[in-house]
Image 1: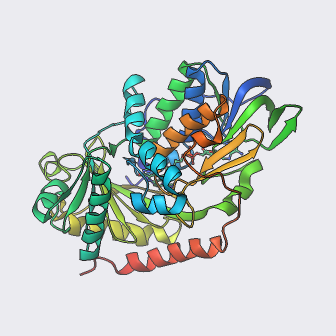
Image 2: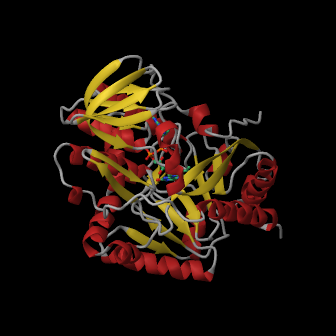
Image 3: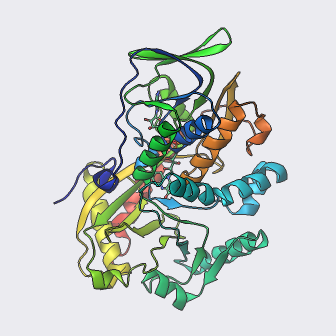
Length: 426
Ligand SMILES: Cc1cc2nc3c(=O)[nH]c(=O)nc-3n(C[C@H](O)[C@H](O)[C@H](O)COP(=O)(O)OP(=O)(O)OC[C@H]3O[C@@H](n4cnc5c(N)ncnc54)[C@H](O)[C@@H]3O)c2cc1C
């Protein structure tokens, strides 16, 4: 049966270990209050608790409601940008530190999964960035060179080896990154929440922060039924800001990304589709991504949403694409479809804002938030425990609304629909 839960789709249908959370219904004190229960907020709460600090997470909806419960589940090492672009955009010192910390971010993610025995379909078998054109292949050669110079375990596969690892002859080659892998993203968020609570953090669901005010040397966060007085505050609302932070949406370029999942594939066919269980995506500007889940469902994704008539348009594209890229699967029967909003910046670099005394936010991971969210949550926790802004490997920037953000969003959405209407028809 077709599942039309278009916000969390397959991840909601298969995630286990959901923590049962109450709403904040009283006044409470904490060393650090955290706004938002995605990877950034939950990782911050976990690391603060591990250091013996009291941490309270206030989540407007439920843990994993934002990008954390909707994403592809690719645990990547580094940003979309190539390392040299990162350095040219933020300078040598920040750039090198950012490359190092995010390059190692899968170690932190998989380390926490192991330490807290988080059941989230975790595979660390590497990812494949697949060349769909000669220009794409040349870009992968550049990527390989830049990462190899920094000692990363990446390797450009030729057409034949790529075909064997992807299970498709559609690509000219692929960059294998052995640092990376895949997870069930919502189950990881649930696991982080449970780990944080086991270490002593308090997490409240359905508790949107409606106001944030300075009260002597502390901050008062108000929710509809309670409040928290905290010395420090971490804002971790990313691409789904609500209530007191709804205006933050002005500061992101919205970029929708949808996914469709097949029924579990036949056992014999499954041996020929991404047989090493790698996550994969391609070099196309309007990229396609592919991955399997633990039950052997093949999940395809691309740019756009699945609202209203875009459901049929993008579903037809997904079906056509799967049948073309992986002809061995025969007719693709799609069971789940959903989408989410990625928070982008015009230059694809995340932002670090210090908005007052003991009040900070890192945001806009540009579609790479599993590793970065987990890492920046930890770094923000350390910063609030007496660190300096210099410990966060990003320049501190002013909050500035993105110019023409609505038009940019419209451009991506309309462009992707037009493209998906015609792509892979012949
Ligand atoms: C479709 C899609 C595909 C993606 N694919 C990948 C991928 O494959 N790999 C990868 O690494 N990253 C991917 N990302 C990016 C990644 O999901 C995000 O970067 C990540 O979820 C950010 O985590 P976060 O904790 O900062 O924010 P979020 O997970 O967005 O959480 C923010 C939370 O803040 C809460 N909130 C908002 N306002 C308030 C308020 N006033 N009071 C209390 N709570 C509030 C929201 O309800 C939400 O739960 C993808 C994102 C999307 C949407």
